[in-house]
Image 1 (cartoon, protein in one colour):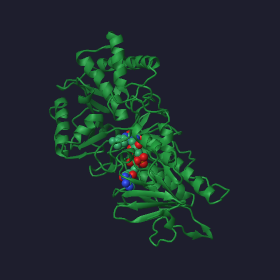
Image 2: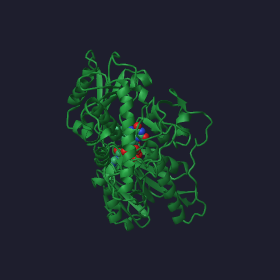
Image 3: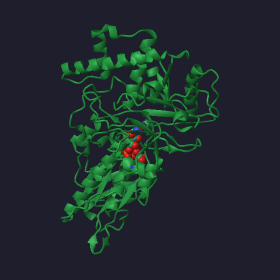
Image 4: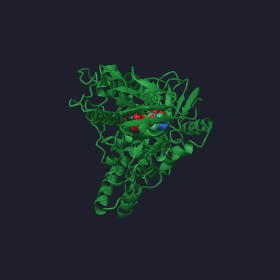
Amino acid sequence: MDPKDLFSANLLDGGIATCIEGQHTPSVIVIGAGISGIAAARSLYDASFKVTVLESRGRRGGRIHTDYSLGCPVDMGASWLHGVCNENPLAPLIRRLGLTLYRTSGDNSVLYDHDLESYMLFNIDGSQVPQETVVEIGETFKRILEETGKVRDEHPDDMSVSQAISIVLDRHPELRQNGLAHEVLQWYICRMEAWFAADADMISLQTWDQENVLSGGHGLMMQGYGPVINALANDIDVRLNHRVTKISNGYNKVMVTVEGGRIFIADSAIITVPLGILKANLIEFEPKLPDWKVSAIADLGVGNENKIALRFDNVFWPNVELLGVVAPSSYACGYFLNLHKATGNPVLVYMAAGRFAYDLEKLSDESAANFVMQQLKKMFPDASEPVQYLVSHWGTDPDSLGCYSYDLVGKPTDVYDKLRAPLGNLFFGGEAVSIDNQGSVHGAYSAGVMAAENCQRYILENQGHVDIVSVRHEVLASTIPLQISRM
Ligand SMILES: Cc1cc2nc3c(=O)[nH]c(=O)nc-3n(C[C@H](O)[C@H](O)[C@H](O)COP(=O)(O)OP(=O)(O)OC[C@H]3O[C@@H](n4cnc5c(N)ncnc54)[C@H](O)[C@@H]3O)c2cc1C
């Protein structure tokens, strides 16, 4: 259907322009009901726009997915608030909802979301690694990373973090490790890869440590992230099971087609689908996306991370936050998050990132759980069988196709500006377009709010309004402190 026929067509739905008090009510379609889309919709709804959210899944939240089937909240997607501080844009809402955080680390770096004293590492045979070795190799790893900074200064062209580590180890043979110490070093690399959800040979040396991490360390959302989504989505018109297949824009209208052929029309649209979906060309754009936008979509990486959550009827593991398995390669290393320490529930969550996360998705859920249990039984021969388990598949999930974005080697410097740039009345949100904190919940939230602000401005200016309605959340100011259970 040609956009110029929009006004004469009789199949207007969703964001049809209606008149309130003699004026045209601006209408916006938000595509995707993850935190970014919901935040955008909330902003527009609070500013009295007509908003319809189209979501392909049968649930809200996207890469936030708090599962309750184990008898307690378990986040199979995002689980940490990175930056437990008042500057975090989610802090006012988390405070107002009275949600509790369990701080796993006060460290503001991207490398560790756990404090060293709460690790317990084991080798592949199940023997515990002496804590002195864990601490000592942790220091060595920091030293190696510092040296990669010098490699970066010497090489104007980007390279991968793993290439830079090889150069450092060639230059400083004393930093090379053997035997168990080498395996512990691989474990640290595995933890770094987990942050980016990508293997070290894919991560950009130029930018890996350039993220503006908020202060206050990293806090687990003890009740899960679900309540945040529910609160933000209150009263918002979210149409579940509405998979967008085509977006046409022109003549100051956007026409959005969903699977089954139904069409929604509005003044503007905000696209918050994951970068993996855009990369896979699962949505047709009319007119086609310009080449610079297509390149920006291709030039940013999407990583993968998966979780296997196991619920037991007894706790047979020690009271530490993280149980790690060291191995000769970072690919073969692994770790379990001990939810029992944080929340009191007898649940361990195995976390895998990068290529290994993709390989896990090739297994049946039962085989994946068995694989993880084999690791656990090496550490704890008396481990009981889980009474229930959950397995995520973020890499092959057709609604995410990956877990979050990261900087590929050689990423152009303007890639985020291009990803974020609107195309007329089409605006882009989602974690990948966040200004400072890609790959995070708070970054996705801010990106949604920013897309909504730009969209509002565009529509109101286009309609000749001089006064721009400002985005106003109910909860911006609060004197209630964040509730942190471990300081
Ligand atoms: C395993 C894992 C662990 C993570 N851990 C953390 C963490 O601890 N802390 C943290 O801050 N961040 C973490 N993240 C990242 C965080 O979850 C994301 O950055 C954030 O949730 C992304 O929000 P979003 O709204 O941009 O995207 P999404 O949540 O993916 O929302 C996009 C929505 O678009 C929908 N959609 C897709 N295609 C279509 C279509 N064709 N039509 C309509 N709708 C469509 C999807 O179903 C989805 O609901 C993690 C992510 C994963 C996967």
